[in-house]
Image (tube, rainbow, N blue to C red):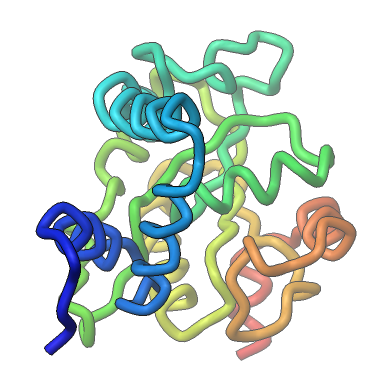
Length: 207
C-alpha cells in the first residue's frame, strides 16, 4: 500500500484518480506539481473547476453544454434552423464545429445503443429529438454517429423512428474510418464526410 507524507496529499491523489485515464502515479505527479505552483494559479484552477460544475448547464433544445438555457449554436439565427446533425456527445459537436463545414443545429444523444454496456434507446435523448421535428420545421436530419456496430445499430433505430416524419434523413460519408470516433478524425476528412453525406436509406440498400 502506498504511504503518503500527509493526509491532504493522499486525499488529493485519491480525488485525481477519479478522473478518466489518471492512475495513481500520474495523480501523485500532478498533485506534487500543484504544490510547486504559486497559490494563485492553483486557486484559479480550483475556481474554474467549481464554476464548470455549477454554472454550466445542458441546452434545453439540443443538450449541448451552455451557460444559458439555450446554447450559443441554437440561439444563432444565422445558422440553418431547419437542419439537425445528430451526434453521440459534446466532443463530436466540437469536432464538427472545427471543420467550419456545417452551419445547422445539433442534437446530442448522450450515448449510443449498446446492450453490452447496458445502454438502451430509453437511456438516450431520442424522444426530445422527435419532439423537435415538427415544432421547429426540421427538413433534414444528418446522422453523424461513430462507424461502429453500436453506431450503426443506433442509426437504424433512428431511421425507423424518423421514417413516419417524411423528412430528409442523411448520414455522413464513410470518409471516417470504420471503428473511429468523430473526435479522432482530422478536420479535412470529417468536413468532407459532412459535405458528401448521402441519403441513409441508400446505405441500407447496399447491405
